[in-house]
Image (cartoon, rainbow, N blue to C red; front, top):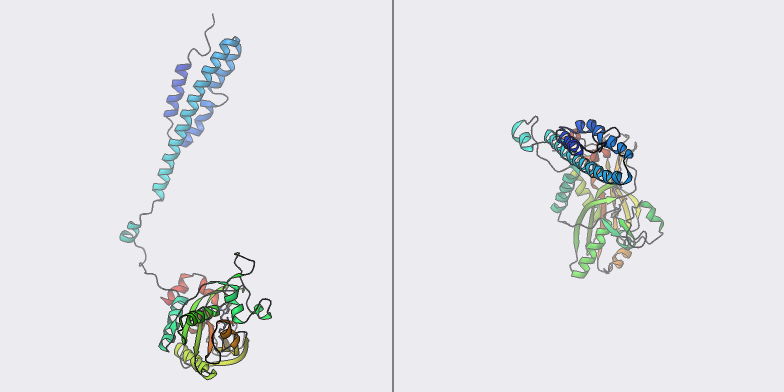
Length: 357
Ligand code: FA5
């Protein structure tokens, strides 16, 4: 009588389980795996030997062998999970950064506190100048409806003046009805609406904030930049008041050495309108790459409020008049600190940023 090929199965299985338990690393496991469950393993050899058995005996032995293989494979997977977790723990421990060690122990360079960026501090300085001149400070939303950004400012749909502002549209509601504001002028409209509703005219306010345009960044432009808007609505306001405010502001912010000038321009929401410019501080008016060889840098636009705008918000143009202006905060920072290329403001080069701490 020939003995069953599975006569020693229990001992053989115990040997495999012991070998699995002794595997110390994932590499050991990968190396041992073919000998434990692979084609040349003892389990596979036993499987082949079952072919010589009678069908009934083969079925019974097959089931026994399958159960043994399942146990061995389960033990191998469990060992793989345990070893992988151990390897990960070792890796994490070696990567561990104890912030306490860095701060309290091995500080390799002087720890430095953060500080407001140049654009933020310029915005504050500009606000201070205008607060000193009797203006209040207000803010408006960066995402606007087409009505506030364009229509209420006397720029109806399809008006050619829309081409002055290359607009980012937000994918909300009807197509092209919600925009990232292209200028701070829509905040004028919010302010006038509130003043009408609260019966609180006159208005003397400045409104700083971020604006967005599909402009290609260059020495004087960014796609996300900042403006500060000014709005005065009062009785008997004239262009001389506007010119006086612009002149006072430029002298207060840039100092008496910098010249400024107003040049006729067109904005749909002001009439008459002007652009105001200052001497380029990079070349002192000689002409350079930053000012496109003109010797002047445009800071912003301004003008007397167009009666159509007053009417859009329900202000009686027979009683009230006013002016508005809007200029670039980043441009002011650039001119005040003689930064040849505006893109330096957003490049986050700490050697540049540290100069303004
Ligand atoms: C306007 O945006 C008008 N809303 C200004 C205005 C307000 C006119 C009230 C009349 C009454 P303009 O598109 O010219 O105008 O922009 C004004 C200023 O914003 C520019 O002179 C410049 O200083 C700044 N500016 C405009 N586009 C950019 C840009 N892409 N990057 C940086 N600064 C910019």
